[in-house]
Length: 245
Image 1 (cartoon, helix red, strand yellow):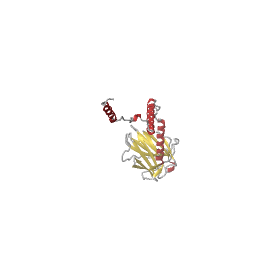
Image 2 (tube, helix red, strand yellow):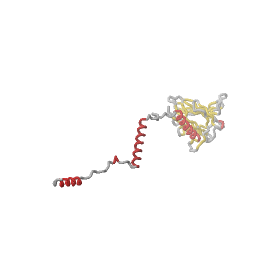
Image 3 (tube, one colour):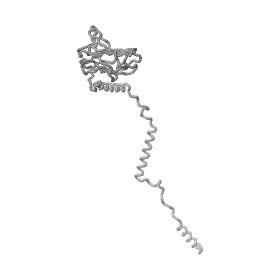
Image 4 (tube, helix red, strand yellow):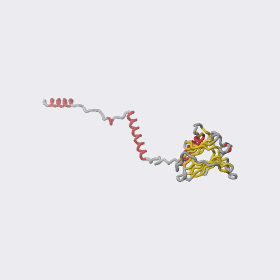
């Protein structure tokens, strides 16, 4: 070996030993996944696959819900109104503030109307008539009678007759087929076309006391002596009935 060659190989060996060694670290993506990481990846893949299947599948829900049955809803409202009306009709507040039992029996509130008063009239009993006057009325009348026979005609204990052309509210009675003296004095005419009203007929020992919309208008002294015989109410004319009691 030439003398000068030894230092060259030594120099080359020194250079090789002085070079940095290549890193043996592996990329995280090349490492085997840990058990926990593998479970997370599997769960993520399953969730993604389920989402894609739901998006691709046709919807099983209807586009809109079917409407509820109108008849069923109307029936519920009618039952509720009937219950409220029954509670209201059970006790009526008179002008003195004490409850009076409703004792007028009627099938339907149609005009002309005829209804029975249970037990007839007596002191302290009150008859309530609520309704709406027609738009173009001529007259209407309310009668308390002793039955509803026509031959012979039943006695009329009191007839209240509203006449709109003259703005009069007349009262009279018919006993044994004969009309008595008609009364017409009035502080004011209380009825208005196409408007509601409330008439109360309060029976006292010597008389009927008449209220309209809570205001006392007049008294009418009894011409039928046996009050319990007054057991019928009749209503006729240009009005609509909304409540009786």
